[in-house]
Image 1 (tube, one colour):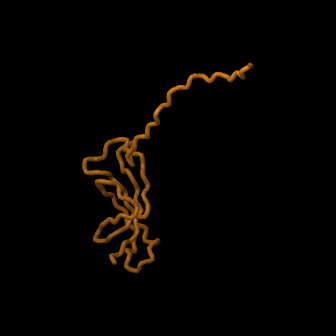
Image 2 (tube, helix red, strand yellow):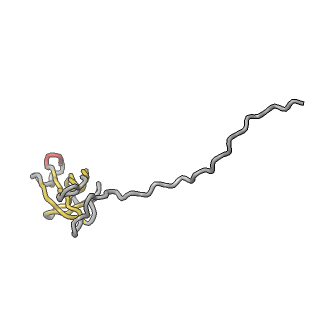
Image 3 (cartoon, helix red, strand yellow):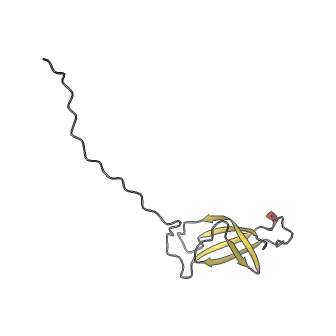
Length: 109
């Protein structure tokens, strides 16, 4: 009898195991942070606040924190509590600050 010829399959290659990507830090600085932490520029825009107890003047200050503040964190400056609204990170290629932080008035409840 005639047997049907089946095409021969090439020998299979052993499968390679997939490796998971290694987790990267949230902000890998190009240069090491200063001894005290990360330098940031913080600014408050008075025009955006509807709270009658909020400061009426814009504020700008530079600070050093052990970690870069995140959205929702509270910051204390000049006897006033502020809440972080936005964070703008920079790749620090030269000496300077690592982030701009926009804050709003945070009235204690």
